Image (spheres, rainbow, N blue to C red):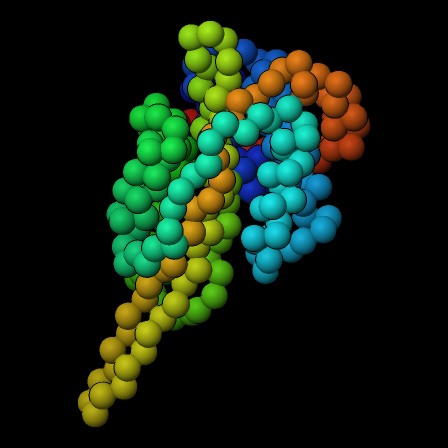
Length: 214
């Protein structure tokens, strides 16, 4: 893996900063995918994201992810892909650090996630869930700890259509919800679950991961 790695692991957009060794990287991605699979057994991620994300976070906290502080964000209407980028950057920076925010932005652009938003604003022809994803930037601190920001991003599209005498006005909007919090990845707490999680995932891990440069 590169020093700075981006990966889509299930619905987790993971970005790992330089200095995080290969064992920790593998453990983090397996832990995240394990939580994704567990939550998906109980709830449909697309149709019931609030309950899905609750199960996902609960599973992570029982597998070595120590909660530090919450993300505070009120649901927000946005009208452009550029606004989506800047809002996400601001929320992550406030909840974690500038480094975590830059990692999130790099992974977001590396996966070209804002292309979905651009297409929606360009076409503006459908209501409903656009997508749900967990952005997970990870940094190695000076004391050796690994900080992870579990940032649940939910996008719902609405299209306001007004009919006039000679034309129709269409105004697409997206409702952005960001939830989650800052966590510390506890290697010692995770270690007893490593073999179990790998066994449960089997070959799913290799099929569910897609790396890309950031």
